[in-house]
Image 1 (cartoon, rainbow, N blue to C red):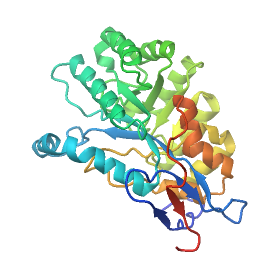
Image 2 (image 1 turned 135 degrees about the vertical axis):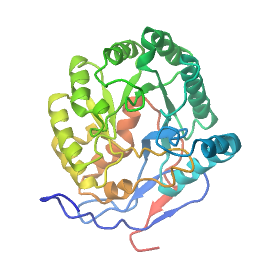
Image 3 (image 1 turned 60 degrees about the vertical axis):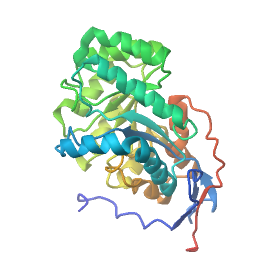
Length: 330
């Protein structure tokens, strides 16, 4: 149940008719009585896809997970992700390794994760135009060389921190020093900020962002509950250099209010989609964005333009005729 004073849920989205196969890429806005243009097509970029397993870090069966990796990863994972994107109307996605990977070999395992995510991007650059890597704060100064390598050799677009899995707090001084090094390479700091997890509390993100005001941060998962969503309003007030993705939000209504107050340029579409079999569909938030009261320019910014600007991406090579909404039930 929504908190007292919440807006009523948005109307159910109109049916979506998608082309099949990996070419289904763009979403057409159905328009509305509030000034939308029927048939206008929107380019959708999802800034939050994880490649890898979540099971080992989150209580799943280790042995079954290992078997799935050995047999299915190369054969099923990519095809499954593309099918989900096609079915959901997502043209492109930014890919990030899963933070639950094992590290018996220390920083060598982190390097292998970064190599793997760069290779994943390169398999389908038309669908995954940018990849984000990982460095581990517990590796201390040894991570500086890896920051340089992912920028200079792998051409990654940013680095992700998910301190829930990394054994440190988000206000770790190592993270601050890493972000300073990243800024010299133009790498985007991608910060998982699940407010209910003490290691990722939003006040810690706020402190980090205010300490480095010239750096633009992308916060993931911050709209994950009503309380954390309201907390984001405060963060946006005091740290203008923090952008937010839509992952884990149960309702776009509050994000719509946020966008109206702080500007649609502060919000990016993201879904936190993990690899098969955990990830099965694109978040319902996409339909709510399309049905929201935001104007068309704001929808375009949230669904794609902001991501392209942040990660310095070219326009999608997919023509925006691959998927369409139908307002007449066709």
